[in-house]
Image (cartoon, rainbow, N blue to C red):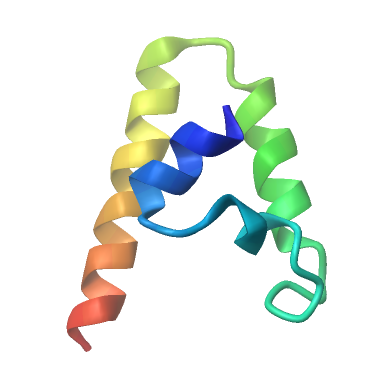
Length: 60
């Protein structure tokens, strides 16, 4: 699952576990929340949102 998220976000899986790039544990929270989503439509919506935010931030 982590590999698919990394692929969707176009980042290496290691970024999820790198304390320097994520000192507050936000990645662990994100993965926990993701795992809690049981509905495929909800997961797709979250993924679409994250993708849109990531694209917008790279255009800034």
